[in-house]
Length: 291
Image 1 (cartoon, rainbow, N blue to C red):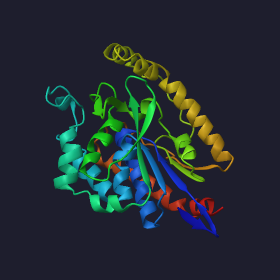
Image 2: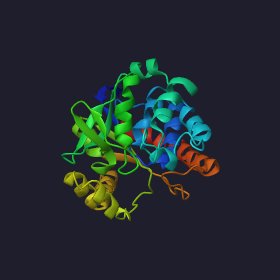
Image 3: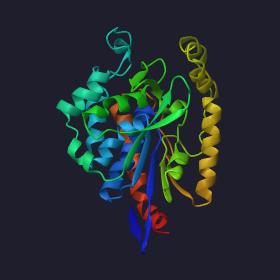
């Protein structure tokens, strides 16, 4: 909780996913760290939570180092990992979620554990098709929760947590601003990885995913209506922004960076865009938080 002018308010931060395009958000996070802007409640989707934990552990620059040093590395992602019967995921889960944070570029688990707020990852239950909001464990056992939130259909296998199996949270709740409001946040900051007002189109490979997930009709339903739901959510979010109820930061351009982009120059350009926008909007953000 943060106290402003004698009143205690709860600040929530919402970070959209977008795989490698989330480098924009990493720039915003580092700008926030420079100004010591931190939430009381954080909810992230897919890469929005995978990268977000380094923000909450206050490891400024760590995400950028991962992006520049390891995203182009063949050990990080590629078709060879997807067709490997031992891995069956486009992203090399063991390398990304174990070797990098535990050996190559250590994640500060103690600092993350010391974060006083609530941290949640959005996942999609493969049987119900509904979003669930799992609290992120504060140690190395965070791995499965992070992987589940990032598990895009086809590119990942469903992840078992407890008694249930999960896929990417973006299938059911791409921009979980409602969750932040439901959690009692008086102020909500939403960081997007698409331009303000972006209109999502149906996936071109929908027939493939429908076939692969025919045993899970609710997931098929999510996939069929994902674009429609995303566009409605975007419209509602921007209306709330107009009303002054949420503060939105979105890239003016994503510079053609896609989900699996590995061109370091392009990734750095989008990171710099995020840092610039985060820094330039700090004063407006603080004003919003203090209202």
